[in-house]
Image 1: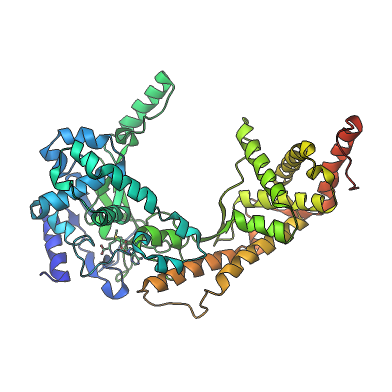
Image 2: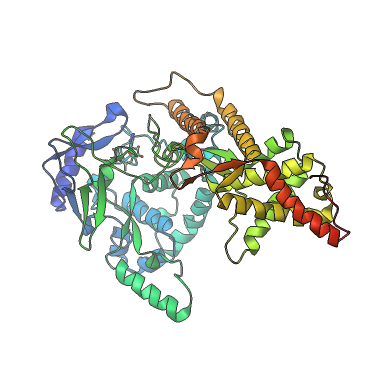
Length: 503
Ligand SMILES: C[S@@+](CC[C@H](N)C(=O)[O-])C[C@H]1O[C@@H](n2cnc3c(N)ncnc32)[C@H](O)[C@@H]1O
């Protein structure tokens, strides 16, 4: 059996046979002691915008450039009827299971977790046991693993689709093999722009103009192919240390430095703007000091329970409010009202919260005060909907003018704190700083990331004094008077509308 370094050297030799050029300022490094597998490190200082390596398009693997469609061009039509994931899964399984040692990419595959089970482990959440996943509670990432969707795809492809494609060697692919290939694609693939994608956009626009409709949802109209890109995928990623990016030209793919890199530093790509929970789900690792894009989440249910238990709103009134808010957004042709009732609300590490969270808490706060002062309209079915709708519209106007009420702030603080409470007993204040090795340690880092983000969102000065303008906090009575004044005028004109006791 070949050693880790021998596998690397064979891969490097293969790359040079494939005419992949690599800057002499770089070396592939064994980073297993940092639990990072292989990576690339600068062995000399590198300037910004230098070419790090260059890969001919023929070296990458995608549905146009793989043994399956090279040997059987008709298979391409079948693959084009699948989605990007499904078609690359089948192309890769063909390469791995049918071509094996004969595959053009064999020396590349030997460097990947799918072949090198001695040195790599699949740590994506898909592979965690229920007990291990429980360590991630109360993070909502547990609800987003996507096992059911993955299994549905497996049942669609095997054996029906591979039978239609006439690939008998793939009739007996197991769910485990499928999950591993799918996870490999998830953590190693690139969406590589097709050389003709510009032309495609023009054609699509013309078609849209002619037919009045958009893309037909097929791979051909996507403008890219999900692809495996040997060498580009040897780069690890870091949201804060990102220093290189892949550029697509018609003939080659070029990795370039996006800032100067000192000798000894690692070359880091980015896998997009993910928080630690999502990095763990997709790629099976975490950033020990938190991702630049971390956030905590407040589930809708936390908000609902708070308004029931602390403010004293009846659950049915909250449900009715959500119904009215959904309807306002649905019926709104002028797009004045966004959908604000979401399953959960992101609270970012960088002190940003989403507007939807502000809307929902502000609206429920006003309803809470009106309800407390015995505004019987809220119990009267006939009037309830028009009143909730009016309150919602007033709150939209209020927020648009960068104002919120003092009671909003009190409730916002309590809600964020109640979510934080769910984390407290799991947070280890002497938290990990070195190399993370176990799934339990990774789970702790995710919880710490979410906890820190939620805590940051309690810093009102930063949250409500953003660059785009600061919020002013007004007395709730002023807004309520504004809402109820109009109601009383309506009530005078219409005896079916009851008058508020509020003055
Ligand atoms: C595209 S590959 C990068 C190359 C990989 N290190 C290898 O040896 O094959 C992505 C995988 O590398 C690992 N990885 C990437 N960035 C990492 C980081 N900052 N820390 C730890 N592991 C990382 C994760 O296992 C991830 O699924």
